Image 1 (cartoon, rainbow, N blue to C red):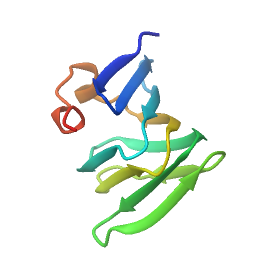
Image 2: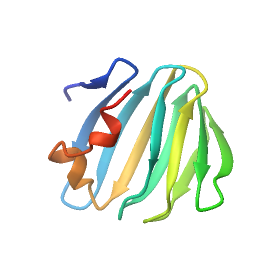
Image 3: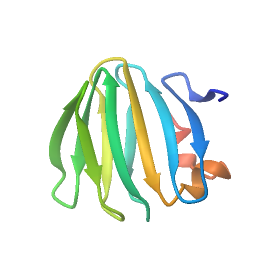
Image 4: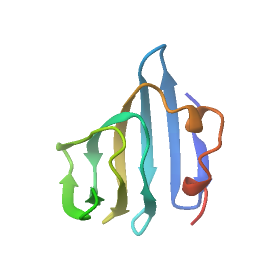
Length: 110
């Protein structure tokens, strides 16, 4: 699985089936994934490191650390901040079309 560099603090590897997408996401400390939402249900499993999520209209703060999982329902706005160098596994249903066709410009900015 090739590793795609989105910018100097964020990269990923994708595996896609017919109905589900799995991604290894590598975030360097200080990386911010800007607030966004998508039609896909998402699970984020932290393998190494920690992410601080701001979730929903009220921007509820949720810190997820190695060994923990966060579930994000479809269409719920969220953002993530890497508290340290982090490796996570993101699982999406259905697969993220914007990731596959590289129209995910919000991720490609520092």
